Image (cartoon, rainbow, N blue to C red):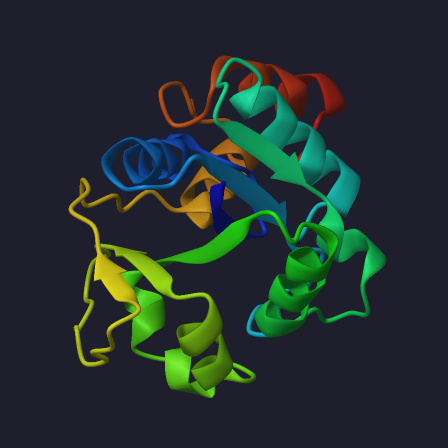
Amino acid sequence: MKIGLFFGSFNPIHIGHLVIANVMQDRTDLDEVWFVVSPQNPFKKQKSLLHEFDRLKMVELAIADHFYFRASDVEFHMPKPSFTIDTLTYLSDKFPQHQFKLIIGGDNLTHFHKWKNYEQILEHYGLYVYPRPGEKKELIHANIQFVEAPLMDISATFIRESIKNGHSVKYLLPQPVEEYIRDKKLFL
């Protein structure tokens, strides 16, 4: 099977993530999309990050009714911060029957050359790239596939701030995720 890996902090997972994952699975040759919950992103600050198990649970709730989506906690068991190439290598060793592709936003492509062993990622795995505001298609490679998808500019920061300030997040989050956040009083 061909698996698209969608890495993120998912703090929280929102409709934008789900739309992109659905487009990737539906309009490419990907059989499944795995949401890889990252305990710590080497490029992001830790301060507003919920516990990794809360973020994993929200992903599980968000994708519960989608047959082609999976939640992955693989990076919870790896050294922190985890680097994409290390996770890809680990998953390839653990699941040799699968071919893995990396799903990233066009905005990440601009800085992709700063990723650990980015050449190895390109050569052995490849990228499926979805559009993001402000992207520049500067990096061209045979293993980079640009996928037409809605331009999603939904920010987890905006969602967290809305929750903190008592504003509605209806339609930004799947209902089970919104209920989980409300029940556990997260982001307040």
